[in-house]
Image 1 (cartoon, rainbow, N blue to C red):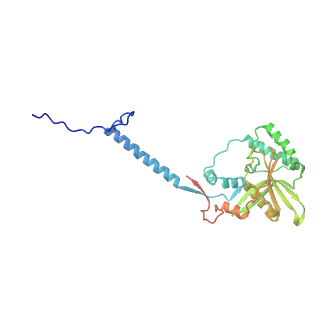
Image 2 (cartoon, helix red, strand yellow):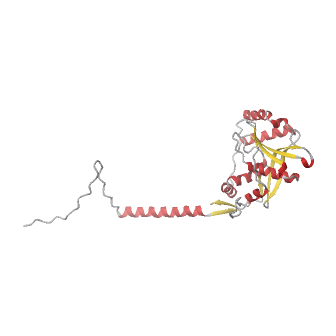
Image 3 (cartoon, one colour):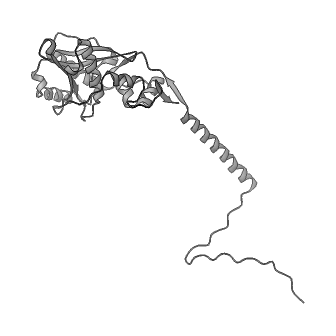
Length: 270
């Protein structure tokens, strides 16, 4: 008489020699399955919110009046500049910037001792200064005395300007202007003092100063050159191919230099 039958079971798959057997997947309890499902729903919701936030933008209109520093910020980082306009944050005290202002004031007093410039807070020069302490400030003064400009008399120092570009007004001050010749043959050199340690100044600053000075003096831009003086080393940098008025206006209109169209204004991610 035949014995009871035993259900046939397939033998487990052979494992490669030297490997541990693969455990069977654990089965979730109903409570665990509901918890995992809620996690999935939360992740889907968060992912959707993140994608919507990245896709949406907030239009931030440019102010009617800009400082030269703001224009440089717009060119260097449009999104960061737009966010600063949308949510301005208070700036902590900057001792290095104050010492930079003192350096500019010292140079001005050196050439025009009776001049007391009236500057608005946002127009104060020296914002990009990297002057560690008063000893470093004295070092910069000594370094300036060793440059060629210490032996030249400027035509103007801390010269204010107001330039209309693309329907907006850009304001600023030029550190120094040197003049050669008179009349129709006169030429000018604009110089901006840089006290920071790296030679990384944006030539766009000189382009703006150059156009502003040329139009203020009613002279052709070709008669105006521009340079950075890095005071610490005495290095003089004269960038070539500075943008003209049309290029500066394209920047304010948020138009690329090429032919592709672009939305006007500044856009900030929400």
